[in-house]
Length: 175
Image (cartoon, rainbow, N blue to C red; front, top):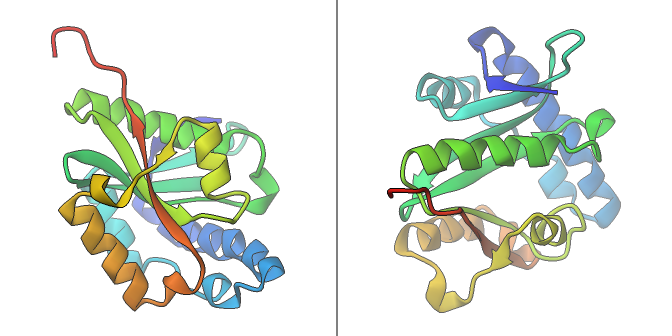
């Protein structure tokens, strides 16, 4: 698996990955999550142009099978979106993308990764716990992360329990 910056020509493929990755939510009765539109092309292009959009590409054909979008939120690198095509699931694709973000974040002096996710979806919070994230208590959530949660609530995502999570990054020598 090759982790690299997204290319403009493949941004529509990222939308396809997002749609396919949403389908398993139907099995949990979360149809509105499955039906949620992927980020528009102009948003994906903005992330790519800013150097905050990575893809996991199959080495054989260099075609993306997963992607990650990142922001800086409360001084941490925030996973805005990470999606993996179901055909590539359970092969470490998401973890590889998150590890790439961790390297990027550490190089910029961030001390952690954050994300928001569904608490009870097996491939959400339980998965992130397995790869080193922990659920934040309400008093640990920064102002910007609280703002993201507020937008998610307005979008109707609070129909299912959601949490904010954080993974500390190792401190860099000399930092």
